[in-house]
Length: 417
Image (cartoon, rainbow, N blue to C red; front, top):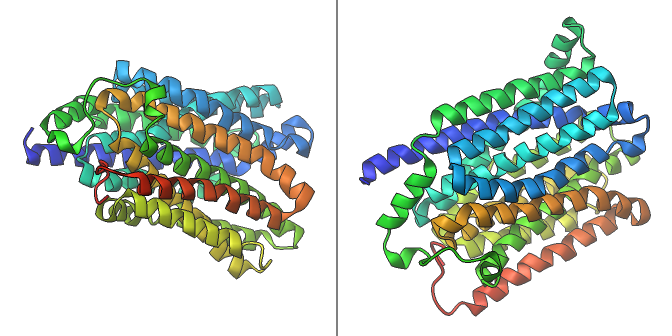
């Protein structure tokens, strides 16, 4: 494959995945903005408000693994299109649940939306596998950057879509779910039309063209063997535990601020700073991952998370909380992008979808556990203790990356290491 043609293909695939990520994350965040309100209304109790989100996270875990298996058989284009189709179905069922005032139907809808989220999240690895090792961090970061569009556009869609729903004779809060149906449909169309040629074929051609010293060799290894590789374990810990501590503290911050008499405008400001940290610097973390190596970026992410956990409980003021939540998002981004690139480096084309799907099982389980347990920890011991727990869990990937680095005897496939 000529370099010029390969570069054109990489750009086309990256643009397609960025557009798809932007559309689907906007739909998901629009729904998430009103989900707890709808859940409390349909369930008849605020105690049930967090259950739909927990089911969404739990559903994404097995879906990630099953989609990974499917993508090796059906290809990335068909597999991602099918994954996003679950989002269309889930948003449509949720819309029907709002109309029927049926809490059980809403919970069923979360299974489809969780599967779609798993597919969308896995798409970052498609960008990585069609890129040579020295460009994988940037390729992943461009897909993650699509979350910025969703973080901005999703909440902005809530008010107009609610107005459209009322005009159409639907319940007001049905609007964001209807917007979700439309955005997931658009995401499917973008993937089906734009993800050409088949990325799996491109990845195999690229692997055949790369020098053997730059990539793992041999037949596909079983998962137990992969999980004995220190770099694989380090990557999984970096992504899953940074996800867990980020969601745990982020999800409780609004309640903590409400307890301290903050207005909604102040809460929105803090969360805007958080989403800015999560997505806006993705290109930076990707470039640093390619230039400095995966190890320094993951290490930097862990240190940034520790700084966030130290700052957050110090003051109830909006400025300091904004800085702390910004750092929380930024630390997660560095761990997520660096860890994704590190994992992609360790796998042959035949191993990638299955192993990466298995990795994202941990992401879903970590998010579900954090969504549920953070509320219990906050209610029992307070916000400072929750941040202390976040710091303690962050020490696990921090220790893993230091031990992995120390134990290296031969160069890893991560560029710059």
